[in-house]
Amino acid sequence: MLNSGFLNKVTTFLLLVIIFLLVFPNTTFAAKPTISISTEKDEYKVGDQIAVVYEINTADKSINSVELSFSFDKDKLTFQDDDIATPGLQISKSSSAFSTVTKNVADNTIGQLDFNATSVTPVTGEKILFQAVFKVEKPGVVLFDVISDFTKVYEGVIKADFDFSSKEITILEDGAQSETSQNIEFSMIHTPHKTTNANENASFSLNVIPADKVSEARLYYKNETTESFVPVKLVKSGEDSFDGQIPAAEVTVGTIQYFFGIIDTNNAPHRYPEANEQFFDIAAEYKSTGEDLTLSDIPVENNPVVEQSVTYNNTTKTGPEDYVFLLIMSLFLPSLVFNKIKNN
Image 1 (cartoon, rainbow, N blue to C red):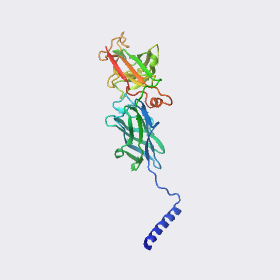
Image 2 (image 1 turned 180 degrees about the horizontal axis):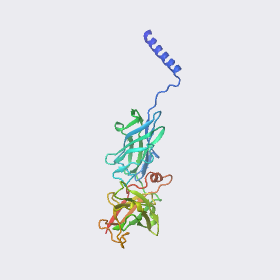
Image 3 (image 1 turned 60 degrees about the vertical axis):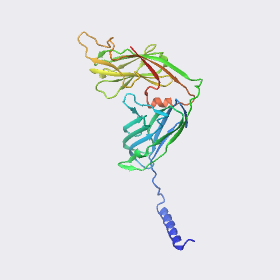
């Protein structure tokens, strides 16, 4: 049987709670920011592309910076690079609500994403942190999760508590290909040149045979004064030719490195040359009196790649596709296909 002293204490406590609520009727307990992970579907097949969206709901906080680490199943998934012109694996930062991204790297060997960002104007509400694309390699259950020990959220300079939710999906075996399966076979051909005139437009041509397998083509170039590669859209100019120019202002004296990137009609990206560390070179020089160095017919000796053949099979699916989203996030990802390089 309860004694009168205990009952008096309980009664007093309840009265205090009631008085508090009457005096401060609008009092609410502060909600924590929440980090969440989402995908379009809960089931995918081997060979699919998965577009994963990482978001934050700031609740009643104004978030100025984040230091984020996420895990993914490295045995069943392969992260797809967002920027093949930059060494390493890059996470897309174009859709982030944060104005300045200071770290956006992925590691397929340990299955981890690291994303640090700041914003002068505080981020509030439900906003996208970043988006990532993975290729499915093996069947099974896959978990996308937050590595909480390495994740920090700041309101100003104050570290804020946060909640998070993971995302689990199921990968099914890739059965027989559907009737809409499309095989892609084509060759990319480019003859590199030794020199071009400095301070003049430099023209380049890429032949793709057959050309009807190309959805979009670009040239990426970098001179000795630029840190990253600059894209130039190529225009179809003949039966199988795609042409483009590096503007004169960018054709500075010295070596210009370049490579080509295309997206085929199955929305698969391809780099030419295939290897990330391989490029075509051309020397921009001032021409002497009476001498025109524009696109000399002498091939550069250290540019052995003249033709690259591609064989690619992709199962076209019915209904909404992730590929449109993939193209918006990243025009060119590393090659997802088997490419064979023929050397001269």
